[in-house]
Image (tube, rainbow, N blue to C red; front, top):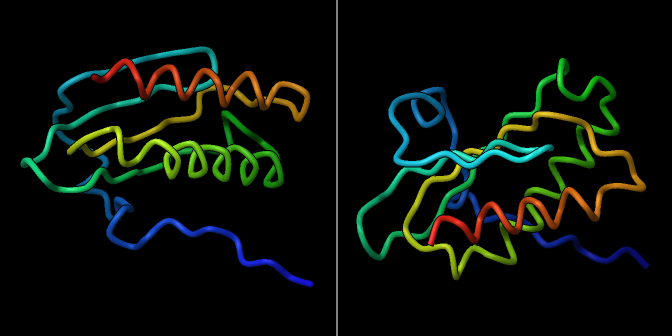
Length: 114
């Protein structure tokens, strides 16, 4: 039996170079991630952009794991984050044994915006 994976709605994604550049209102940095915040108009849902380059995470399997983890944390926190655009940059690879630590760090970084 194949269960459907929860998806991030299209309107919750940042697409195009214009969304990833420009001025951001705040920046939080941890061991695994750098999180950039840009405030939006009130009552607009939060949107997410992910930057996971080959230099930071060389293996495609590891890169995909990091991106899935970021999307999952964002999906769970999206309602409480508020009206912001968020760009998450992966700084360092988290091994499978440390993915829980990376997830906890990202949750903490997203909570600091409030």
